[in-house]
Length: 408
Ligand code: PMP
Image 1 (cartoon, rainbow, N blue to C red):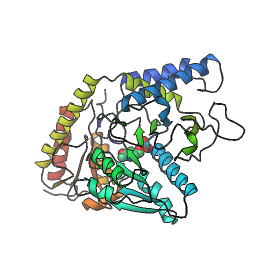
Image 2 (cartoon, rainbow, N blue to C red; image 1 turned 135 degrees about the vertical axis):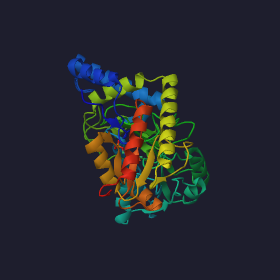
Image 3 (spheres, rainbow, N blue to C red; image 1 turned 90 degrees about the vertical axis):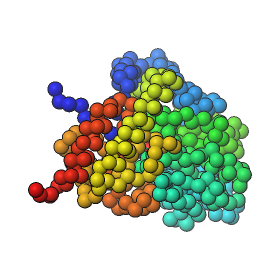
């Protein structure tokens, strides 16, 4: 029997998924796969019930005040796009002559960087980019200080997908509120939801972008955007999120207008119901005790990776030197072997999955001096074993001692 791959790319998408995920998806396709919300027959009703259970489960997980504030999306990029386009378009429509302003940081993923930049490039908004330090930390004071009376949106990644550094979003949001209570804060939680508790009410988050396929261990093509009352009040006419996506929602709406109620106002078209059935199963398979155990296991493996890599010659490790305030991610380079080459070699020769390159976070790599080649990211998951980490470290040690082209 072929050996199982050593999968160290959980920051891209978690694998393997809990067995309940595939079972739930097959069961959904075989028995309940009508079009959710469209049609009153049993299969459509059952599909709708599954989707609403997934919405409620997500709402419970992040302590949303009600499920309707969880808008279902196709992934975190989709959530970020919905939030940024929505707020910026909303601000441009309501602008009283002044140009909207947004804040982001160098730690952001391309989902945020590219989406905001397209407005800035066209001169439609001003954007201030706050630098992170080489460990990937953003100073909450500097972040908030960039907020002015024109700032409609401030974006902060909860944890860096490249370095694993977790930001102090609590302090950052409190300071933003003190500067301008009207500024909406978007938190990109692709790397944290599922790995650590995220309470949108306690943190006073306006918009939380979630991936269903990473820490939550659901299938790809699933995600959500939490929308606060400040961003989209129950009195819908004061909504600050303008949605350009139009289409059928299943709900009755007057004439050619979209419904104004959440979540329908921001959800058009048939959703990924089979994916949501899988995500629901993944969330239901979780309990606080298992979560804690898995988290401790992943962090112990991260410490083992850090320690092991530190003792290998010619290795540079980036980011925080310890596992505090960090997700299970380690970023490194081996002198003399470009990151993508090393990752490709590990894949081809050892069936080890890591990601080499810039991880859709080009400004992080500029900050740590690894652009444009990037670095190698290893991200263990709950099913990764100590033996797998030790095997990985042995292979890296061999590559360090006998690099390609070495003689003797
Ligand atoms: N933001 C961050 C911080 C991420 O790590 C990722 C995924 N690499 C995304 C956004 C995009 O998420 P998705 O793959 O679900 O579109």
